[in-house]
Image (cartoon, rainbow over all chains, first blue to last red; front, side, top):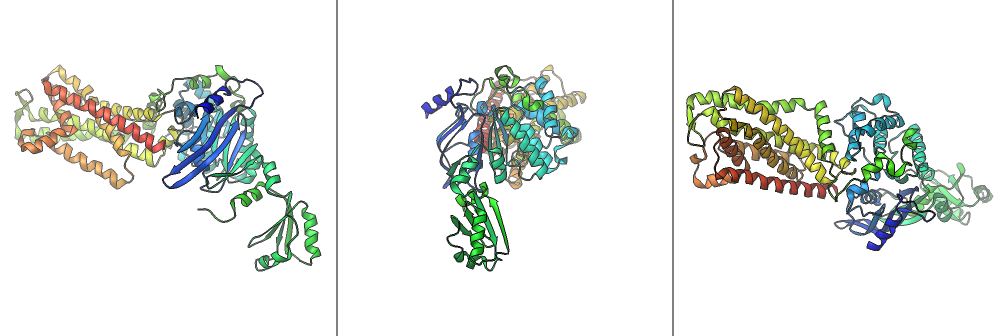
Length: 327
Length: 282
């Protein structure tokens, strides 16, 4: 553990040394148990500086717990973890000085006004007012909240609060931004604005660590991601490579009506690479969806509707983590 | 947009880099003042009325008991054996109660709310603040309030002609000491509380302590065993300490009273910090 800490310390971003990848986060066999429940079960991953890294998984998969351990606000049960070359358990305040955190639930300071939220939060990082005042105004602009600067926080809409939370996380110009379901509850416009802002932060060299339930979001933003289920890593790679590995190029979706979907399944055997029968539709995973559809017609089957689409990360996700609800 | 182009690339020379190079401990980042600044800013906008009412409570007691009841009681024996008016007898005790109330209100109800509903500490502890910064900041705010109450109350005593010696000014720092003891402990105890019903237990302990800690009459009225019980309670030490200071009579017991609070403060800060650590850095 000691050795890996030292090794990653050498590759700190603050001392750029050239071509070798500089890992800002190194986790090895990271494990977290709450009593009998194992929330995170021996996961290992490394995140190089400037990468957008996604943690995907169903509810209860251990994503948020992993985020908390990275922030040093949750103590691991075993394994090792190094953030910017530091163990967050030993150097909590120091590690968090490099982090920006957008928690799953907004925890804005309701007793303070909008702009004061940014100023006070910046003070927590020990930043001087001379820096914070212009910075707060810039961030309000960034979050499109300039005319709400003097409002009370509870007067803001859900989307505005989310934007303020994100603006707040940037007050210390973090090296690593932790985003726990950042766009949940936002309307499409707000999501796209946020994606754009996150993309620009990434261009600046900020490392993004992101959990999300939205596969399109993961595809848009993440260079690389891990799919986590029941505390274990199920798959790791770029969105494109995961789709290549765990799905086919295209998917043919057929609807025969909810009564017939199941019975038709047997007749479709052999078309495409894989077949999945759902209550409302039948999915055929195939390299060429149109060709598969022709085969279906050739067998004399007449679906009510048919749709050929590209395989998405969602197909990968559902294949890896199953379709049943996890509670 | 300058947010994005900002000083991130400027690297080592920027303000944020400087803030990152500060000295940090594992649970302390030498930034208590940020927590205090936050508290002052929040007070400015919200709970003024609660603060004011906290000041008037002991003043009302002093007027009704000291002046009203005092007319019947007449004069009583002070700490040095001298005769003093009943109002002058109970005034330092009420000051100790007011220091206790201010500190306890801030460190229990306020903290309970911030901990369980406003989720304030979760947010704070995701920054470079450590749990010790948060605990010390919150306790300092409680003390500031205790000091304000004490100053106001001492002024009221002066106006009512209950101050006969310059030593009485020392009641203000002594009240802060008392408030420190209650605030540091109060916050630690609050961290165990999960529901409003449990919070009521605090009042259940405070009220008898207020009534029976030799506040309104000397300890000697009780049988010996009860005396020992009361002498084990913190408020009694505060009452006695302030009563001695109010007439400028100091004995070895003065040191015991002060020592009691110093130990209480040390244990309280230890308890609070370890609890915050357990609750938020689990």
